[in-house]
Image (cartoon, rainbow, N blue to C red; front, side):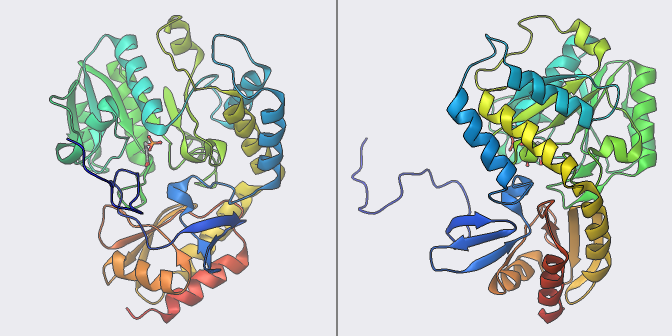
Length: 384
Ligand SMILES: Cc1ncc(COP(=O)(O)O)c(C=O)c1O
C-alpha cells in the first residue's frame, strides 16, 4: 500500500519525542539555532559531545585523517587504529590491555556478553535494576523495562535482576551458572545513580569466586566523565571487561570493548567482527579525544567544577544532587519535565531520566566556571 506523502512532511520515521529546537551550529559548550538563539548545553546529545562542539584538536584530527585515508576495514592493519587502541588502554585501568572497536554502546555490550558466554560456557547473566545497556538483543535483555520495548519474540538468555546497590541480593544471585555480572558503575538513564564502592567490590569478589566475569558498562560514565578516566579507576576496582562508547570519539560513532591478556588469549580469530568498527576516522578521533583530555588537564577540571555543581545547584527546585563528576542528577520538587522546560526558557539544555524527578546533567569536559554560574543563576530563578 502506498500513500501520497504530505507536501513538506518529514521523510524520517517518527520515533523520537523531539524538542522544539533546531540547532544549526555548535561552539564550545553552546548550541546555536537558526533563529539566532544560543543554548548552554548541559546535555551534549546524551553525553556524546564530550569536548563540546568544534574542539580544534578534534576538527584537525578528522580533517587530517579524512584527507589521508577515509576508510579501511579490519581486513588490513592500520597505524591509526593501533595508536587509538594504545591510547585507550593507557588511559584505561592498568590490566586491561586489549581493545576491540565497534560503533556504539549497545554493540560494545553485545560483544562483552558474547565474550563472557564463550569464556565461561555458561548461560545466565546478572543485571542491576534500573540498568540501561542498549537496544540490541543481548543489551536489551539486560536493560530494565525491556518488557516494554525489547521488541523481539523471546529473550536470548536467562537474566537475574538484582535491586540497585543490594549487596546481599547480588551475592545470592552470582551462582555457578552465571557467565557475567553487567553493571553501570554510575547508572545514566536511571538518573545518575552511583553504585557504592562496597557494592562494586562485592561484585568483584563474588564474580571472581564464582568464575563469572565482571563487566563494567562505562558507555555513559566513562571517558573522563567521573573526573577519572573510568569509574573503574575512581574506585580502584578492575573489571574483566570494560565497555565504552558515547564520548569515546567526541561525537563520531565509536565504541570499544576492553579486556586483559587472559581473556584476550581465549578470543579466537573470527569470534568478533564488524565492518565499520575501528574505521580510521573514528580512530583518529579516539586518539585526539584522549590526547585533549590529557593535554588540557580536563579530569582535574571535571572534579573541581563537579564539586561546585554539587553544592551550588542545591537551590531553587533542587533538593539533592546525585551521581559522580559530570554525570549528575538533580532531584527536583516539581517534575523534572517542568524544570527542564523552565531551563530551556532560560536557554539552557539539560536531560531527563527514567526518574520523573531527576534532571540529568552531562556537560562537556571543557565546561568553565562561567557556565556553572549561568546554570546556578537560572536554577535560582525557578520556583521550587
Ligand atoms: C550505560 C549505557 N550503555 C549502553 C548504551 C547504549 O549505547 P548506544 O545508544 O550507543 O547503543 C547507553 C546509551 O544511552 C548507555 O547509557
